[in-house]
Image (cartoon, rainbow, N blue to C red; front, side, top):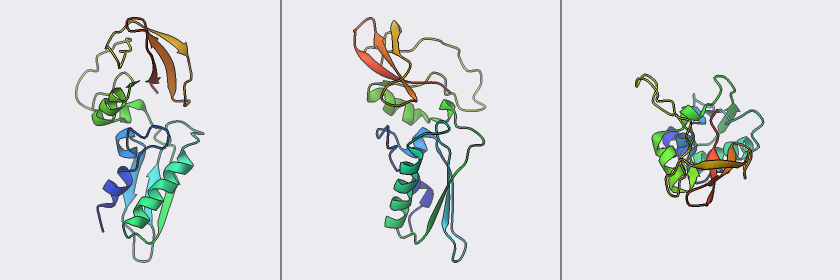
Length: 160
């Protein structure tokens, strides 16, 4: 059997397929099965009521079953709540590469002071001269912005 955490964590997010569930930080734990029991997986949605949580659970279950697991139990946990700080640096890089401005912040816990910046950088040209078009974009966790320098619209993953 493959490393179950790696298998579950490699599942792409159904709404943001450029990042995996591990990179997004929503995969909280994967426990090896006890004899005769299921593999236990815990997920925390990006926000309560996230419509993608059911798809995430089904995709994880499918991935684990394809790797030889016979039974999977996926549970949604709300505490501690998910935060944009849970997105890995690789996840942030992938969001930016896909034209989605990653959320501000994201320093690793215990890594020292977090620089405070209110600027949202355009993922296309890097300018901080951006304006809000809509508080919501293709998903509730993103806002739609426009760069005033290159005039291109882009999604911004909102901070939580």
